[in-house]
Length: 90
Image (cartoon, rainbow, N blue to C red; front, side, top):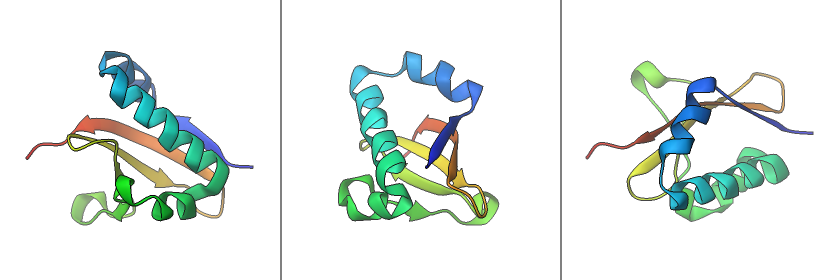
C-alpha cells in the first residue's frame, strides 16, 4: 500500500489555487497511490524529473505549464511526502 502525506502548508495552498490545478493534483495523487513513481514516469504530461542542487533527493512534476508539485519519497517505504505545490517562475 502506498501513502501520500501532505504538509500542512500544501493543504492551505491548494485551497487558494484554481480548480484546474486542484483537479490535476487529484489525478497526480491517484496515479501515485495506484502505480507509484513508475506510474508518474509513464505519463509524459507530468514531466517527472529529479531535482538538483539544494533540492537534491526531491522530485518535481508539472500540474500544468505554470504549477509544479515538489515531493520526496521516503527511503525504503511507499510514502511520498508532498513538500509544496508552487507556481513556477519563468
